[in-house]
Length: 224
Image (cartoon, rainbow, N blue to C red; front, side, top):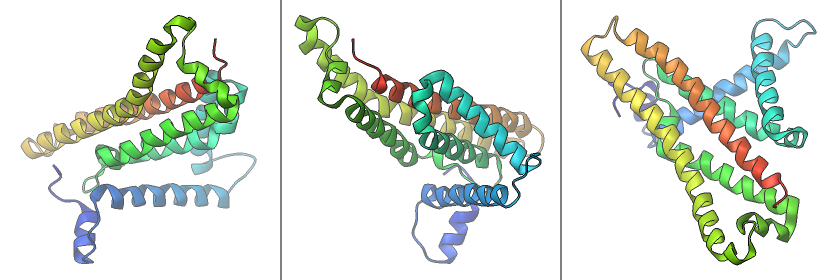
């Protein structure tokens, strides 16, 4: 890892627990999200303020994007999409804290997220259309169906790979660049890179979440 010091890695070494960095920091992200949810649920009011106001803005933004992308039928998948968005965003943002590593800079974490999208996409399609879901892979011309089927299968198998590598490459690359600048000029130069890191964190969260919605919405559509 490019970090000179990782707090949770040091802690697990002191406890003689052999866990991967992406696992411990995934647990940290889950703990942060649970703590935020608990804090919001403890102080819900008709006039939102503080953490409640922030979370209502975030949840409202996700809900609006979901409705624009998937329509009313997509409302049923809000818990899944919102979980992706919040987990990836917090995972990306903790990279900006010295001594913390983003779980999304590890290919294993991203592969698990991408495979979840892949499985859910086809589970939703089969649930919605039954055996007719196979028509999504056949194309509009019957005599081209064998060729289109192979192309569609390759395309669908490439989806989890592209989701995994896109998120991993951007977060891992940013980590490397940030650590290089911190090593060369530790006081001033890393600040613009950290500000850019905030932008990268939001963009990568948006891209992954949007693609997940598009894939699931495609499975819900009728084949033509």
